Length: 257
Image 1 (cartoon, rainbow, N blue to C red):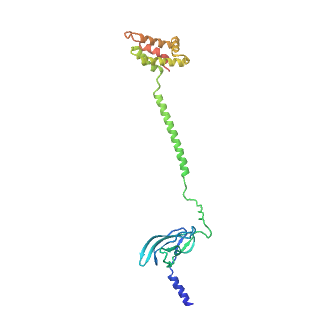
Image 2: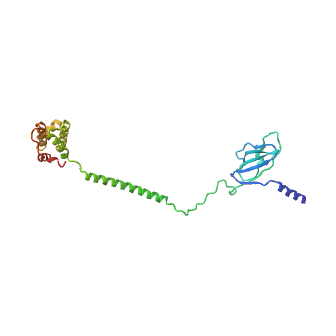
């Protein structure tokens, strides 16, 4: 019995230590010497195979070979990597020495899926939503401020530069007619302004241009500038010019337009 105990102790000392890993975690074993001819991984015939192994590199080691191996386990337990290797030379039937591995699991027995992470409140307070709301409020406020400032500037510009009255538009044309050098385009513009004004004022939109002109000649106020225009256009240049007072009186009905 003493010899048996001694023999078991010697065998335990001679057996290589097991390589330990966890399920799904790859392990690289560098420089593993395997006696005999070259070895290679067996083809994976079963999708549920417990160990997946690869040979990363092979180096000569005297009459044997040295290997860089990588493997990972798909289930917990004790395994022998030699069972998942084979000789490259089919005729070589030399057994491959044991390479014990122990695959452990971090999950309780029977549990397949990982445990749910506990919900822990963070000690940091997130102000993302508050910052988002504040940014939106500032953006809207800035937009309103821009619109109000732009409208105020436009209002001030309009107040600073009042629109010209109809009299202001007529005055240079009347002066050109008085001087006797009004062009045909200016004369047509003068008549157009007068016709447009009296058409809108008297609601003569339904009349033709000739009828509108006739109505203007019959109107006591409209006929003043129209008749005077005909007199200026057909008056010789040598005749005395009209005074500024007369021009102001003629344009008086049009000052506020």
